[in-house]
Amino acid sequence: MNSSVKATAEKETEDRLRTSEDREKDVFSDEEVLELEQELIETYLMSADRPIRILLRMYKKYIREILLSMFFYCIKTLPCIVLPIITAKIINLAANPSEDFAKRMLIYIVIMVFVLILNIPTHMLHIKYYSIVSRKVEAGLRGAMVRKLQQLSITFHKEMQSGRIQSKLMRDVETIQGLSTHLFSTLPGIVINVITALIVVLGNDFRVFLFFLICIPCSILTVRYFHRPINRTNRDFRRDTEHTSANIMDMVEMTQITRAHALEQKEVRKMTSILNTLANTGFRLDMVTALFGSISWVMFQIFQFACLIFSAFMAYKGNIEIGDISLYQAYFTTLTGQVSTIIGLVPVISKGIESISSVGEILCSDDIEDNEGKEKLSGLRGEYEFRDVRFSYEADQPLLKGINLKVKAGETVAFVGESGSGKTTLMNLLIGFNMPTAGTLLVDGHDITGIDLHSYREHISTVPQNSVLFTGTIRENVTYGLSDVTEARLRTALEAARLTELVDSLPNGVDTQLEEHGANLSGGQRQRLSIARALIRDPDVILLDEATSALDSVSERQIQDAINNLTRGRTTFIVAHRLSTIKNADIIAVIKDGVCVESGSFDELMELKGEFYHLRTLQQI
Image (cartoon, rainbow, N blue to C red; front, side):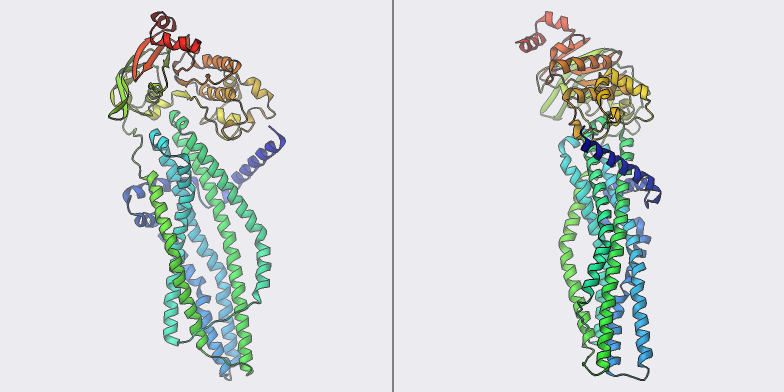
């Protein structure tokens, strides 16, 4: 690992530790978001085809916060309502001065300054209450999708592209959050401004419009002052977003391992914590942006009001003429502006509704694994029996056409055959990813359709053909899903997987960071890392999709040694590609066109000179 990569990895670790230390300052808790996740899933299921109703139900429990946000919004907009009225009164006072001119002018100034300054705290409170609600629902909605993805079948994950899932988790939820902002913040403001404008215009029949340029230098200085904090907060938010996106992709790619090892709840809690961190960073970004926006707006209003006072004194001196038409002009501008805003919201609302429906493709899916009320297994002996097992995704295209096979505890069974013969389907049945469409698969005498698959998978380990590694350290990849793993236990697993020489040669040992998908390791090293992950769990049953066919002879020999350590004393199922690697298997089952055409030991099948003998001869040519 080069120095720049190492430095980057150390910096990312430092950032994560600092985030952990700051958790006590967070607004949202993991437990609160976990509770919200389940509520949002139920919300979608109750109103699957009604996007607007779903949106309203999302925020139903936060009515208090939304009303408070709207209340402070009304107060913060007082300057917009009061300014035209005060303007007209000052203009009229300037045009027709009275004896109490100074006193009345002072009253107008005090009122205007008060409502302007009042905007800063009320605007912050408006954003605070709305942002709390918005960010909670945003984190809860993403968390609900994570929870549902852990429940959905492997078939669903195979059919839906991981890029689409990531888009739904990130882009669509962001769009929904944007729609919510307009519905609960922008639209109420439009209604308030329109009603106020109509009442004042109809009652007074004049306009107010004032241009000012003197505020530009101050606005530039304000932008420069807030430039660094806003950039820093935006950068933190972007990093957290990228970190979240990377972890989501890892989670999606690790789904089979997570499900096979019964780690769904741990994965849900891990992702909830990551998503919660993103929500809290977003909240801090909202607060910084809100303060900048509020101060900038107040500054503009102060300069506008100052220009108005100056104009009033000019009129008082008789230098210019002024009329109440300015009031009408201001509110006419308000009306046209609000109408333009409403028109601009139409595509935003349309896009948001589509995103709600898009998220529903995950949250409303009923293709889930149901373990409710099924028998839980406290352990496995490792006895299996296939009784005329059949399987098909479509009725007219059967993949398995009647498999019969008995496996005793501790035996090693190898499935061999041509591609497409049904070997992978058999492995998916053994893991419980699919259920037989006919016949019976017994696990320790229990029908697999009647057992709690979560409890079953706690006692098995799988080693896929394509090693599934995530961005993290070697230690994190090997101990995935386990807690309090001792160094001795980790070392034993690495030794059995023939990885100690590699680990000892790395500067950071087991704490060396892996690149995406373990790109900084060779194919053989990645495969042995997967074997170490299986070994450290000390499973009762091993399912191994052998991956030696594309490796050199040295790597193959190392992996074969690791496999021998892995399978010793355990019931083992192997999908074999190189037939020379399964000479010691207790049972070799030859699968052809969904049927077990031969079974026996290596020597028995070679003497039979049937299908296995033919396959073995072809590999020796």
